Length: 599
Image (cartoon, rainbow, N blue to C red):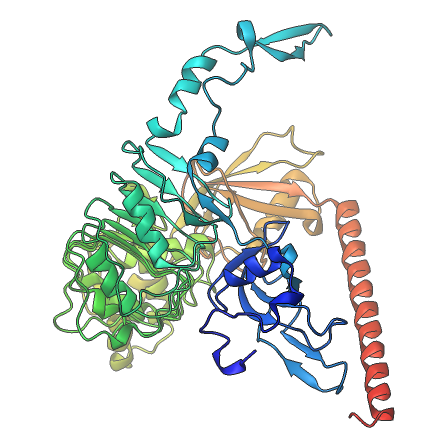
């Protein structure tokens, strides 16, 4: 095999007589670096090498070197030790690769009428429930067997005929191409082909052509790659939703071409593709109908040079930028985002509130998500939410959850208290520091005036500030421990500065459970998922505890804790033992290579 051309051309064997007919047919279908394959367990990968393997017993046998999508599937890096020269030979590079015989390769199946029919029952097939009775029974509480009735099987079967369906899902079916004989699907509007083996945009064009009424297409996890310089001769004005999640796209030029191929897109998912060259686009993107764009984990690092390319999409309402290394939002003059209503930046590198201050200038923004960012990771979930609510008065949906009027009132009161505490730590003469602080908190003066009419816009007396910080919360404390769960809950008005440790002392006095055995949780009204108060030195304000909330006291299970610690210790011992064994094996191999003069 010519190493310099292995990633570009279809390989033909130099000795076809040594290959079986089936193997030869498979090799003729393979384009190295492009063709997709799967194993018998359903793992998918890309064929990165085709040819003999230097360490194989049969030097003439042809293998396929596959780089698997799932990193847990393969442990090979594509290199072997040549059995003739004892030298390292690299056939391909991969983090999760393996070599497979061609006879074991599955290059996929065509999307044809037989595959579609296999997903549904034919009209003429025997009934599963003749006389409306399934061949199964259910046991009643009295121990008797009762028949199970199934009505409407014939009507359901009529509805499920492929040519009549408007939605079809064919996920992980190993589809790699499409039959030219597929016709008669004029009712089909939604097609889900996620997780298949499609690797070429030409096949996508054929699929769009075979289903003329299609308006939703999902080809996620099909490594179709980039649209080349020669765009396939097709255009669809009906498709309005396109999912290209994990499709191996590495050029933002593909996005420009998508605007031409699918001019009426309303929803576009580009998550988990490499769009790091977004700043290289000469012109800003069009997409006159696009309302939702998902660019999660697309290796975007800058708002000013990359995200700004999207600002002229006049119809864009929802922008998802999760898990990108964006540290700040810098809206420059000319960046409009006139219709943008929702921004999701969970998992980004936003480190300070000033980094997203520019979002306030977006005229229609009302929904913001900042989960798991550098900014919010040091806060409790409730504290982060309350800070967002107080700082951004136009935001009415935080982390996909609507903001109530009561919640906003509590958030703004707590925000005023926090900023006031910072002011109290400064000397009265440090006017400049106070001004800098208020620049970081532009909502403070306005909120302070609303809550305390005696507080002036530029600061007040220390006594006034002290009054602001001394607010309390009215909460109910309920015991869930076995020894005291029969006791009535208590209602207490507590200062927001009270620590969790002192709250545990209160619970100990009331319910008689030792502080070291307590586990406290806080639950808001109608909140199905309580927040654990897991740090004794943190205050109630840190966890966002507000009026009408409830603190639940549970008892620590010492036996379960001991068992968990023992399991962790056993796992640690096994890990150390495994590492020691692997180290000794590697040392033995190195000694052997030194004896042979190979190292």
